[in-house]
Image (cartoon, rainbow, N blue to C red; front, side):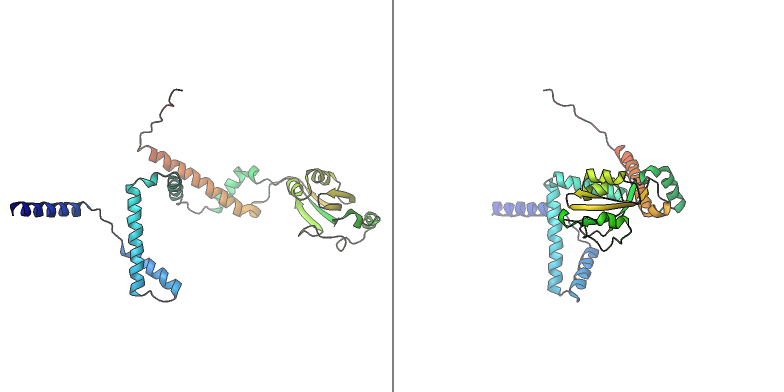
Length: 257
């Protein structure tokens, strides 16, 4: 009898000790209410008590699994670590006040070369995918003033006028050799035929624009995004520098070969 009583006391003490050692997970009411609200919006009606119980059970399961993942050190997984680092950068760079226009204009003036447009050409063209379809007298007719917009075919989704194309734009469209030829043409006269991978072209350069910095008003949205990005990076760098002061950084030497 003494051994039975002693065993019962030890068992009870062990159970009480284990209960006290269990980690507490608190599910806040706001999380549950947000889930219920979200479910209500999806269904168009409040979830039933059974559905609410399932929602709560799902939250509890997720909390248990997350806590267990930390206990097992799974946050040290490379993908998880990268996500956490990116999340921290996002958090550190959140607090950026909207800039005044004067500040944007000053930034634009200091970074003007970033917004310089390359030289461009605007050109008119008559295109045929098959060289045999090109009338032999068409170039002379165009030079004599015949209306070109109803002639030939469309090149992909493009019409007869290509406006403000850079060398890179034309290279993507007709190849590098023809792009360079087009940029060398004098404006105002029909020339050709020129061959590209797509067919043959008769071309008139309508306008040539040199490289230039556009007015602030044309690129204000772009400038605002660049300004915001630059300020975010500066803010993040400054806060990381402050955070580093909390740690002693040791970089291990490579093991000798």
